[in-house]
Image (cartoon, rainbow, N blue to C red; front, side, top):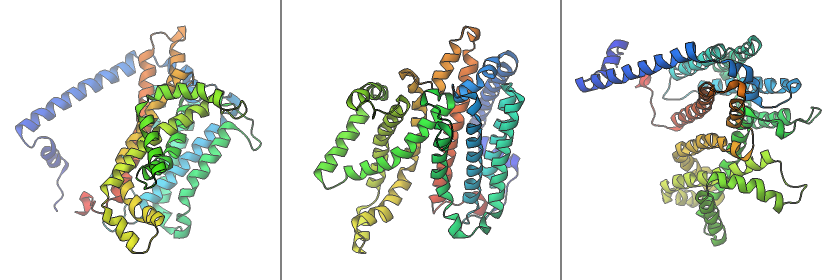
Length: 406
C-alpha cells in the first residue's frame, strides 16, 4: 500500500465531499473559537491563587505535613511500576505487528503525559519544589517505559511472568505507607482526603468488585437454586437502590449491626459499599459476555475431559471477559466518578475538599477555577482507564491489524 502524504490524508478524511468539508470547517471553527476563549480565560482572567494556596489540601486533604514524604515515595514507585509494565507490554512480540520501540499511540500518550506534567504546574502557579517533583516523576515514568521497551526482551521469560505480581505487592505496600504500620507513624483515615481518598476508594472498589462480580455472574447461571436465586436477589436489590441511599445505610446501619470493636471506620464502610454496588453491575456485564459465548464451547471443553470449574476458568471465562471488557471498564469509570457522592456523607474526597475550599470567604467567586481543575483531574484518571482498556482490547483481538502492516 502506498503511503499518502499528510495533506492528502487530511483531505481524504475531512474534505472527501462538499458536505464533509462544510461540516469539518464548521466543527474546526467552533472548536477553535471555544479553545481560544478557554485559553484566554485561563491565562488572562482566571485567578489560580486559590489552587496554588490549596494544592496540598486538594491532593491529600489533612494528611500530616511531616509524613507526606510517604505519599511522594508511593507516587514514585507507581510511576516506575507503570513505566515497567507499559514498556514490557508494548515490547511483547506479536505476529501481526512489527516490533517498534515507540508505536504511534505510545508517542501520542507520552506527548500528552509530558504536556500535562509540564503545563499544568506552570498554569496553576504551583511552587517550584512541587513542580520539580512532578517533572522528575514524569521523567522517571518515561525513562522506565523507554528502558523496558528497549531491553525488556533481554529479561528471561520466567522472570517476566512475575512482573504482574508487582502490582498487588505495591498496592499492599501503598496501604501501609498511607495508613502507617511496620514502624511508620499511624495516620488515621479521618486525615485522608482530596485526590488521595478518591483514588484509594476507587482502586479498592475496582480491585474487589471484579472477582465478586464474576462470582455473582456465575452464581446467577448456576444450576443450584439457592445459589442462583441468592445471586439474583443480590443483583436486583443493589441495581434497584440508588448508590447514595446505600452509602447512607452503610454509614448508619453497620454501626448498629456490628459490635463496637468490629465496625470499620467510616472510610472503609464507604469503600465496601462502593465495592458491593459496583459488583452487581460488573456481574451483569460478565453475564452478557457469558451469554454471547456459544454453549458448544462449554460442551466441547467437557467432552475433552475438563471438569466444570476448569472448563469455565480456562475456556469460557476468557472469551466472555473479552466480550464484556468494554462494559466492565465503563463500569470502572462510572465507579470513579461515583466517588464524588462521598462528599454527601461527610467524607472529604476530592469534591468534598473542593467545596470546603470554595466555602472559604477568601475564595468566594473562584468556583470556575476549582471546578476546572477537578474536571481535568477526573478526565486524566478516566482517560487512563479508557486508553488501557482500548490497548488491551486491541492486543486481545486476533483479527486486528494496524494500518502499517496491512
